[in-house]
Length: 486
Image (cartoon, rainbow, N blue to C red; front, side, top):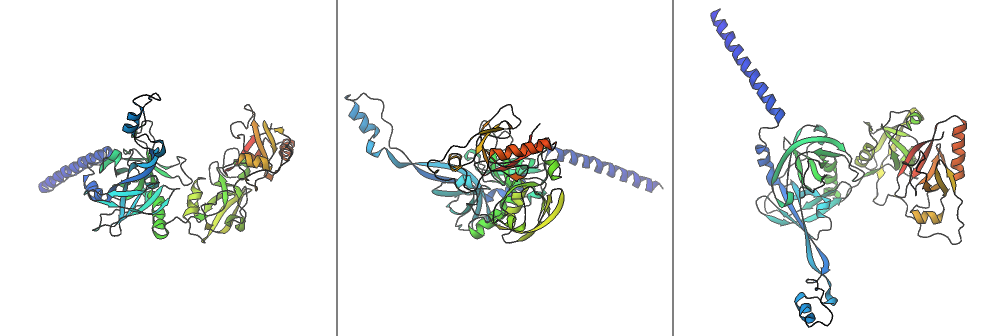
């Protein structure tokens, strides 16, 4: 019994010690990793500094001081300052820029960076951690995600790093950035993931990771690592009123960057899927009409003729809630899902149409670079009579004709009533701007202000409180807006 007591007492002591140690570890983990040195030491050789140069034309020599004409010193100053008007602009200046990148294939010498780091460069040099300097050639670039792929010819196999799954990273997880801020190569900074799926209005596929790890000028194109040493982001942008880090940096998620890199490596370009719809968010004013929760799904504002969507039977007013088995929880998620879909793949698209669930089969096409919008007409016919204006819902409207198309930049395919003025006291004041075209009212196409006035009158007679307008701008944006009519 005594032995058992001693054993129990010793066991209790060991157990208490383990509890204390566990608490200490837990407390330490809350303060952050004890050290990132083992991770950094294993990765730093794969991170490179990228320098570029570009020749520009500028004044030759130093500008001539303001010397009076005929002064005895005029010739002397012209000789000294090399101020020959005939040679005033020559390509005698080189502009350099610095950025970061990382090796993903050590044998082939493949390096990932940002497109804006090498944009316009005539020469690209890659500087390695051991002091080696190699010239690089551009494999391909993607302006929409700001990713570029470079290739060097290494004399020996380079240290490489690999993409991880950014979907697995959580807000609050520790991350590490390595790069070339302000030309200080091999700089390591640590922080956490502050937010995910950030939209900073830089492009159609914004889905940035936000981090408070210190990112500065020169970090662009460098990797953001998780604590397993996997690249989960490509550092791209910062918000800063001073130009230095204030703890708000953004990285392209690896789940976005990796497929782009693979396509650039295979094709030298990115081949994205194309659905052929213009979409908008389901706002509070539209919820009652589409029977889905606000800010859920992607509302189809318009369908491009002869597009995959048109051929499959998708219609304006449909709300896409699921694409290829994946829920569309936010409007901006749909373009990314479509873009990543292989061309010619047939997928199920689930929509809500007038409150009813409907599933359509769509064969995805290829998004062309010029798949934007028809170009504006270069001119208008002579002698075209001005269109009468009409005031509806505080909007001064006139029928869109060729002269107005040319003035505001609309293609020949756009018809409707153009807005020339907006009453600042009207319900539409903060939602419609001069130059917008109303192409639809109460879910029916319109061609002139009279059509819109009739639709508004119909809504009032039926006791409706709002009229839904389809509005297009000169950049090709399309949106539905609910305007009070009472």
